[in-house]
Image (cartoon, rainbow, N blue to C red; front, top):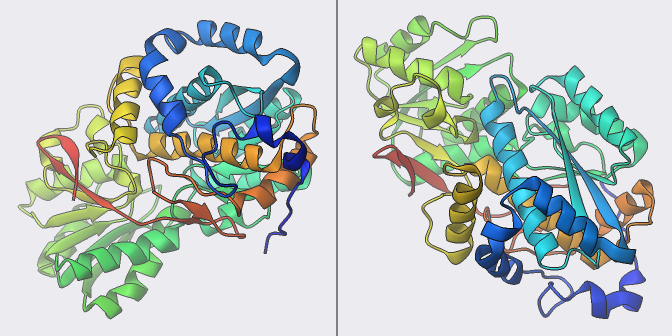
Length: 415
């Protein structure tokens, strides 16, 4: 269990620190920052250079809080990393435009790890040399586990937007925004069962992936409680992730009504294409790893029509926070933000809330900041893109309700 620590510096500086936090000590809202950002985005985030200049001028004597970021901006998982980088920068720019955090400006330095553990550690060392004071990342689970060992040894606060493996937050300095793999597997089985989507389910999963196998294990355990029969469970590995004919044929022969795919979008796009060639058309259901399938190069997106996935974010939601975020993201970077973008945006605002709660100042060491944030994370509540009234447990897990989306007419639609 993580140790709970509160820092009472907030008592001396509360008049300054809580101007953006709402009316209670345990809650923060993003409404003011987001409203200002929606009005001013075109001017404030048009270019990174302009933002940096404005931040430097506004920082003044309160200084700058340096936040590192790590994720894949190149390679097969780049859809995830680019979304995280863009949305984190968007949140940083909004917060700076609204006056910063405790008078400090935020500065984001995002490094590419190509979803590779060794490269993620190299990126972490680069950020340490930059004097990083807190870390958002990494984006995918295996690199996140490797980096978490380093951040724990250095006592640097780490908040992963999307590292879902259990091991990602094994150390007390690491929290996450997304659901864990076990939670995704259990919630998927519950959603399928409670909504009567199918009674006979086949599964194709990656046994070489911590993410995929972790989801499958808890899905299988919960399926029995939901009167779901797993009629076929077929595995593949990273060395055999191109031809799924055998797995699909077994699923078809089992008369599965639904095919559960706790895998990433690249393999899923191949499975959908190959399923069509053998005339297999069940309901397809996945988790957050499928978020990005519509952006796969040369993929016929009509094959994804009707695909469902468990996710805490739907870009077509009609609340003001989501509408402003989607509009600003599109005007700034182009395209519709995915769940990973929403997780990253919430991660930055969670750091803001925790920093305000703990009274963080820029002249504190990274280790002291870590100790302060660890305690404050269990005391804040935020209304984010991925959850309303979102809180964190002492072991780093978020509390929020799962949601599901369905691809309809080529876009993700809330269910």
